[in-house]
Image (cartoon, rainbow, N blue to C red; front, side, top):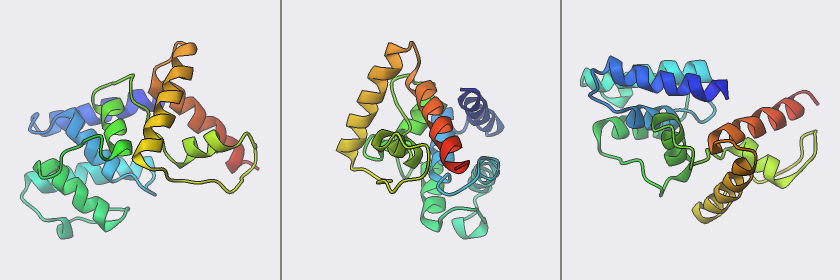
Length: 172
């Protein structure tokens, strides 16, 4: 749960660095777009670099990031207002809602969350790591029901799930 608090502070900090040219929701969308296969500290560095590149009128090819090129381009487009963060991209949308808007009613479902939904194994098992938008919404709603039973926000419960399965699988 500490991670979400720090992530929320980070995207607010980026918004302030831009003199509020970009909202926390936009900077969270940028951070989400740059996150696939990117470590958190590098993800933050990359988000800051892309944001400042946009402010300085630079192009995507002028910036090096540690994720996939299409994600970098998507990040630029989010910051330029050419791509809106909508429910049509459920993971990016949920992340931007959780981190940028502090929404308790969205869940960022990643491959670790999906694995936890498919098995109780404490060691790695073959699992699906992607879902359709409809499946995402169903998993999100189920996760919110359980989170609320424990008096947690959706993103708090997701963080507990993420840490638990990742720690078990990485240590076995």
